Length: 81
Image 1 (cartoon, rainbow, N blue to C red):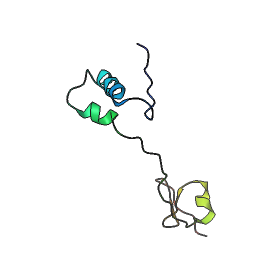
Image 2 (image 1 turned 90 degrees about the vertical axis):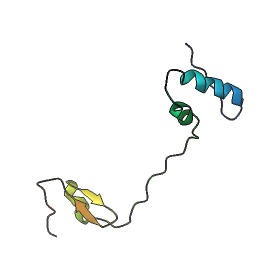
Image 3 (image 1 turned 180 degrees about the vertical axis):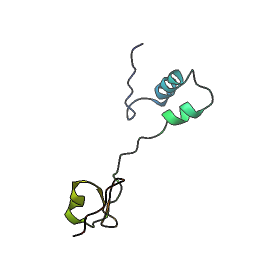
């Protein structure tokens, strides 16, 4: 079966409805149709704090930019300055 591509800006609603119905014909309930009709949302990275961590966490832990503290793996601890 060849994939059918519809431009959401220029394609008709009837074409879109037929395509969705064809893709969701083997599912139960209405979840598939509701899922397929969602409008895509652009990815937006979460806000990040501006605090820097000392010594970039010695290349071991991860810097929490909200608190300015290093989050070290188990067994490691932050070296004193």
